[in-house]
View 1: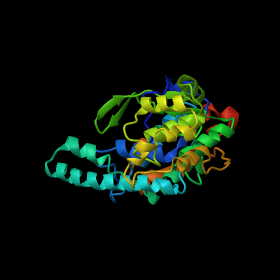
View 2: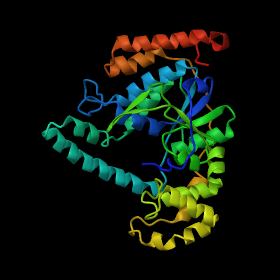
View 3: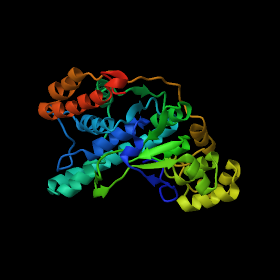
View 4: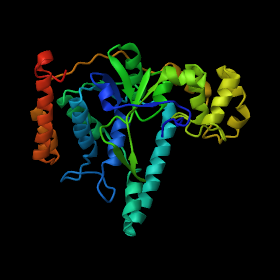
Length: 346
């Protein structure tokens, strides 16, 4: 789901080369779900090994990150911890959606409709504990540090971007990172020029969104941006306020300015929500304003080629030839950087 304020947010397209030498904190779950939903077979089923274990996430981690690291981009993956109580409603909605998609997928399969099978299957994804564990394993074997957040990964990534001068930006497809106060957000972090979605191929280019530019462009401050997000709908209140879109929400925030006055102005609409969808805006505001985060340190370790091959080739049936070809890129990158620190990425 995530916050949708794309129509009013200023952003700038960039080249991967613009991120040369930069350290980026990646919202791990957001990225892994991208891999699970897009790296699929023609009928929409995810990649699997001979034991029918899903490997789409491992494929995405390995091939995309080697390409990015070869471009001298430093990556840190930040994993979700315990979700806030308010987010359980969103999790329940997602589960209901998955169950619905399973039924639709089976119907499409019975009708041998490959297009609809691909569409529905990408919405059936679920990231389980074993996938998370192996994702951390392969990242660490590649020399990419991981950080375990106490709660929301994107909140932790935004926090590290704020407090650590070495971190240039956080990486996520979701705009929620802005509400958590990340100074800079990178979207579409890939060397690919096109991305496959359930509706077909779309052109993509990396883009940067700077929080300062967003606030100046909209004429509001961060607290007001949080209010705007709540009006539209976040993971903590997915339905938002009835009949209030992005532009209307901006007008309300600009007019009333103070959070209390903003929500007093829409109180009647809020009360029209079903009991299940009603929310306490103060509680949600506090989750964005003071998220559960921690200071975290990390370092870039040596690449463990043996471990990479064990995970991908021996454990999950990846092509040894293709893996070896990618490992050669690692060696070339290390060689280019050996004057800095032989045997490490950076």
